[in-house]
Length: 160
Image (tube, rainbow, N blue to C red; front, side, top):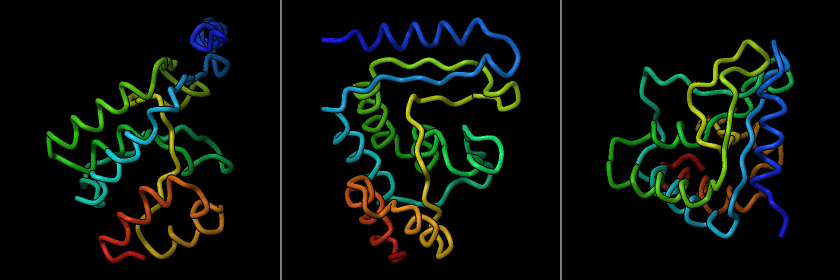
């Protein structure tokens, strides 16, 4: 069995001693046998609510035209959707079992502060016609995650 945590740690350590924009790294190792629990917990949150608080600022990971507005921290996003302590606990427990190693430098490319790093980045489908259209163009709705999480939540809120 390969030492995936060790490989991830070595990779992070390499980038963590760099300087300037080269000191940029987020890295995680997942136990993929636990992803269904994360999907269920995320779906349960999204079934309850899809509207983020007015003061929510997403933790993005992308800079520049190619990556901006595409990758966000899944944990911060999901936990920001609900005040329900039971749903938050279910989600956090699932994430704790799923993400078996994670590290992140303080900044990406010396310009993007990383304040919320759950270890999982995600494309977040905006709950409007334009967001749904973009996701469809990216092939997002061909993914199991879409079938298991996003479509049931959007359908429950009459968005699809």
